[in-house]
Length: 544
Image (cartoon, rainbow, N blue to C red; front, side, top):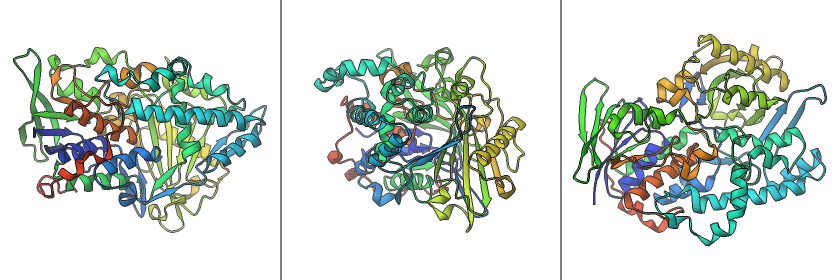
């Protein structure tokens, strides 16, 4: 039956959900509180510089391809993808026992094995076994876990899962740090196998070893980049949404998700109360509501207490992923010392993780950090003979830590951390005049994540992927209290990252259909054949 559906949030998850549901034949309105779509996939443009302000690693290309195929297109048709070679470089400082070290990870598994073997004799054999296990685990995750709505026990009672059960139990009860440490001894090689825990918003000492599957993504599959930046992914999703007939409302602030009792004793969603740019209130009837906004904000701010599946008391038991300080730099002249992606790992990074996740959180100094230089691959993101640098410093999730600003005018704590990171990159990568060549500078802090995205605790990602916050243990995609209310995005299942947001849209579609299948929907599903051709309402979506 055709339903009238309201989707809250115009990030990747909201856009993907709106497109799938509209192509299913439903009437869909999408509401975004900001003036532009994209959510955390944002951008800054100034004097010829263009910065991605959110995701910057294009991993799991099969998930993007599946989504695009599902709506009748392909990644090749929507994006101009380039494979990065090298994939990234790791910079490590000198210590009392070892000199400073730089390890470059090339494109291609065979060459990665050669790099490991050159650094540690015999490690190529153990890494090959590790990556084979990672590939098997990744494939099992895609086939049985990531796309699984977990609405039927039968979805898990599969021969393949039963056969692999002893291995799965071992991977779930062993930490990623311990598991990876059995494959290599060299401290930096261990860090290379463990750093993907940050992509999952957690500490490798707390992440279950099943997440070693992440190493299959960067070390075996490789890293790609969409020319023009991640904003082009939003542009592609926006085109699909428009072609699907979704009505898009920007500058639309959601005030309340309404529900009413029904005969069964449960409550049923009835609509959305929202305010437009002119301050006018709207009470919009909906048969179904999908919130792709932050789950904590949705549950604690948009619902009445009787309708909350995850009240404030529930969140007291949840482990948040890290916050972040972001530093955007426009640099005069070239910076050949840095490739597209760089990782700066401190020698004692356990202290960094303690500072982020421990009982006495603080900004680490020195801090492990990530640096992106997209101008290495894409000349369109910086003026000629200039570079575009983005520095990410993981910090505790603390909405009161401070906001960033332009030209050093952000909160003092944020700017001091940015200064330390700039100087650290300059020293470790041997760019002594880096600070003198800065022509543009802007920062963002946890307070910005809280104010711009209603992010719980000002976190960068959402709940961390610890064991009890993964797969069927993570907050799922449907309300337990309100019929017709669903959730999508990084703060719900299956988890953080753009690929997971695309999968969450498919999980919502499955739940609305009553589909309990554990894997991706078949491409011949026919969704795109129901797409309507009329454009969105121009008065509501002028920002498009």
